[in-house]
Image (tube, rainbow, N blue to C red; front, side, top):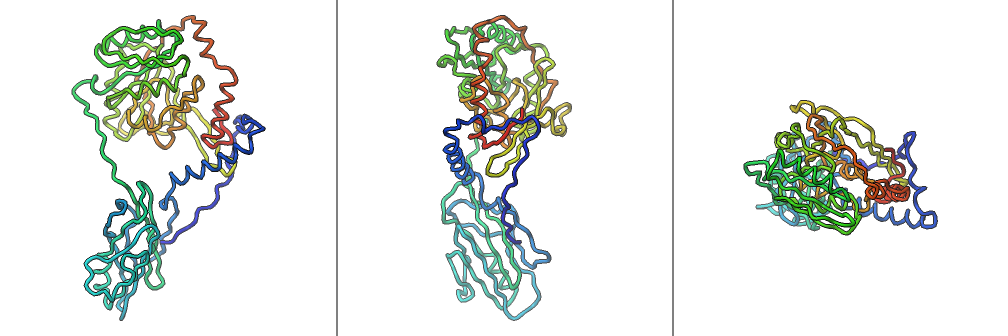
Length: 427
């Protein structure tokens, strides 16, 4: 197996109707922004990429046997390399060489030291007069990383005669399980979360509709109203924020207080009906543990979409949001894999906390959460899981804030340019 270096990324194509983002960056600061973005992207790559990012090509008809996947070691601890051996014709002498870059190699329980050179070093040479002796020694080869890292890797190079192979070593600090006790009923499984701003009439109606069907389930409210009012009721936690902090900041606050495995997000102007079945959400998530978010529909509004991303070259990547889904979820009727869903969804609390909601987006964000979660969150849309929407009520003060000025949208596009390293975006 040989190493093939990665080629430079080609420019990505901004589709018709896409917004070029550099025009939203302050012209006087553009060169400095570009420099800082490039530096930050290098740091990002250091965190996200490792030896496992390289393409490895296996040579044809090689007599070398080695692990091609699943060799995982704990940082700074010694581990035997599994499956090393040579399958070759009889000859008078056999010699192999192994080398690594982020650790050291050794043969354990070594009886005849003359057969091995490089014990405890990066390059290990083994010789033997018989194939059986060689493979016995190879079965005792160990690897120990010498550079502490919680998530990285190394490449081992294995050479015999004219044959060469390269295989990956994954260096991982084990993670401790973080389990949630589902308990016996929906109250111990799900917390309902919402964010409110100047809409107490709608909020109280939402709570009343929830209590018709779920009398004791916990409701968490993040409230950044200008003149806050106390919401009364049992098992309700209301957290007051500084005024007009925004939707995403409120989402972060509400979800930070969830103690159950799942939370159900509902906007403050939604309305539970006899078709709103949280238990069905939970059943889907429990039947497919890989899922992180399951969205429903708000009335007839499904609003599922795919996020398409190309990394691009030095100018940045290209991102577009298009309606639709990828494919049906196996074994779950009328559910589809997608990238993003409507504002009515059940989510795994720990998974969403890892992605979070960017508080820089106050009134111009929803899809952006799913953009940040691309590749991190497995999302499904199940339109038959539904909630109602309250009739719109006149509230002049609310709509002064609800309809953001153009400057908010411009700031969001400038944020995409730096934070997401995009040169264009298409909603």
